[in-house]
Length: 120
Image (cartoon, rainbow, N blue to C red; front, side):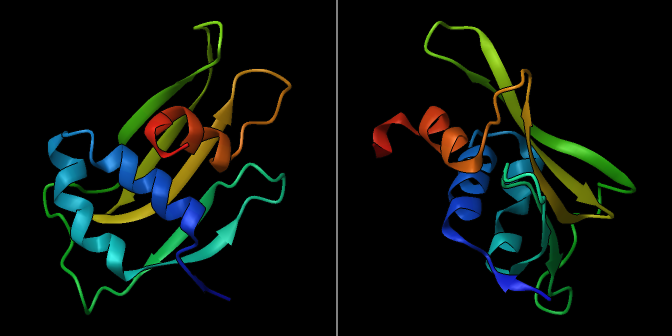
């Protein structure tokens, strides 16, 4: 079952893709046509996407599956506490992953607070 792109996913995806790298910028049009196919059961907020391929073209320069954008997440002490990765498969956005580098679970709201402090 797919669901519309939830706000937590959309905010973090927009923040990472807007960081200015070429693949990320080229993928922006796809965000309007994404749906969440599955979400991680652990609660981190990682999501697998499906995209309406009839509504938007793939980024042809990207083949296979690869990470096209990543951002480290820093804690209050300046130490890296995790990262957020954006994956593309055959030119289409396919996954947003939130990784914790400790036993403390990092979630999409955590990532949003760290990446977008002006939105607080």
